[in-house]
Amino acid sequence: MLNQGGKEKGLLRRVLGALWEFAETLEAGSYGYTLDRIEGLERELEALREELRQNRAPSDSTSLLR
Image 1 (cartoon, rainbow, N blue to C red):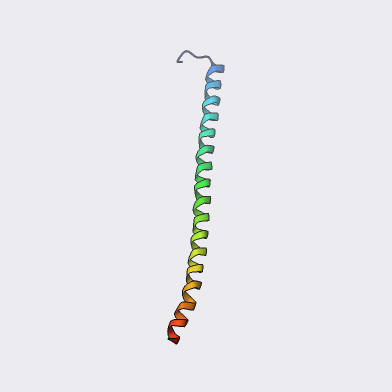
Image 2 (cartoon, rainbow, N blue to C red):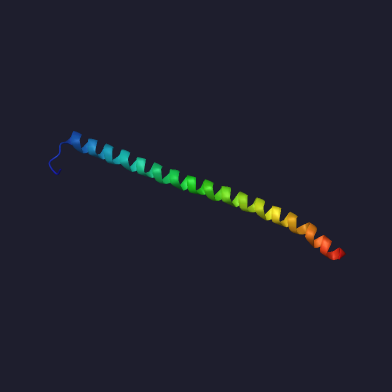
């Protein structure tokens, strides 16, 4: 490797650069996927909290009447 010509060194750099960019793309993709999943779970949790709050509200008002 130390005795490579100019063209071969350039080729190696381009190949390594392309591999590095590909690896970064994979990382960004999994990071984005994870964030999307977290956001979806947060929305679902908020909907469940709202549903729970609505279900508790009528039972609180009926307990006052008893």
